[in-house]
Structure formats: C-alpha cells, structure tokens
Length: 241
Image (cartoon, rainbow, N blue to C red; front, side, top):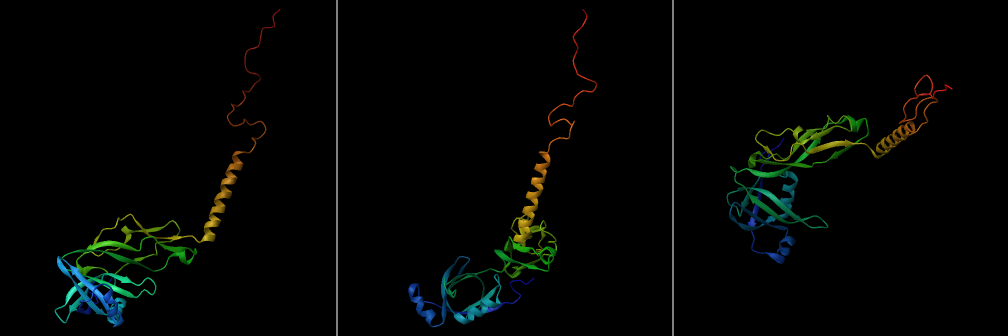
C-alpha cells in the first residue's frame, strides 16, 4: 500500500496577477491558473505550466503530497484539493492547492481497489458490485494511503459480502467510515435472477395447489372434527309403551 510520500513529486509555480476572465489569456499561453491556501495563511494566486501539471496528475495519487515551489522559493508540502475541468473536453481550467502541516492530521477519502478472483464471478457468472468506492480516514499527511486493496476471494456465492470491517487498515490510520457498511458483493446475472424468480413462483404455486387439494375420502375437511366411532352420538328416546 503506497502512502503520500512514496513518490514525492515537485511542482513549480509562478505568482499570478491576472484574475477573472483575464485568465483566459494565461490558458492560451499554456499556463493554468491556480490558488494555494491553508492554515490561516492568505490565499495566493498562482499559475502552473499546463503540461507539467497534467504529467503530475497522471503520476500522483489522489492524496499524494506535492512539494510546491513558488518563484523558485523553498518548497512547501501541498495536496491537490480540487481541479475544475471543462464540461466538454475535460481539460483542467483551475487548480486548488491546500497547504498542509506535517504534524497535523488530515481527513480524506481513500479509493478502494479490489484484487484477486471470486468463485461467484468465475464459476457462477456473477457481476461484482462496488457498493462503496472509497472510505474516509484520518492520518498525518505523510501517512495518507493512496488506495486500500481488498481481496474478493471470500465472495464465493451471491450471499457473501465484504464489509468495511473486513478491510486491512494501517495502524497509523484512523478509519472513520462505519464498519458495517457493505463494500462489495456479487450479483447474479439477469438471466440467473429471472430463473431464480421463476423457480420461486413455481414453488409458491405448487404450495398453493397443495393447500387447495380435496381431502381424501373419509378424511375430515380442514376445520372439522373427526366423526366419533361406533354409531350416532347422543341419547335415544325411550320406546317403552
């Protein structure tokens, strides 16, 4: 499991004076507007090299620590807090960078990554359902996991499920997501689900038919008392004359 400092990357930035609609000229020059803020310090407008940032995005994980150097000055550790992208071509338009203190814990969401094989998928033709894509954790900046892997080998049938409590969490990380939440399970294919539903309907119909059958000859009907043996019940009237 990699952490925030496994592959510490560097990012160079320059101070930015242009704001608002004027930043469009920066983008045409291959620069990306950004802002850095955090821990009571005033926000600082920056510009980044567009291609350098795109390369960094591909290498860095979601919670990767980055050493940010502004105008060649001493680098400071930051996290990419948010990236605004174009709604059509998905190119970055603006970047938010968050300054961190290495001695102060952060709360972040960590992606979950399934590994291994499942009998319910391989042999029962089921489909893996990711009911939880990430978990929320708290840790020091240099201990933030980039991802948490979990094995799906325990998903042997359609009844089995993996819960948050089944995940392996590093000892220096505090898990904040509720342990009973379901992470993943395997669902039957549509055809299998339809066959199971049909079988259930047939079984129910057979049970209803069995309840409605006529009782055998001589057997009491449902709700009736069995007849007494040895003739009619009750006293006979006297025939003395």
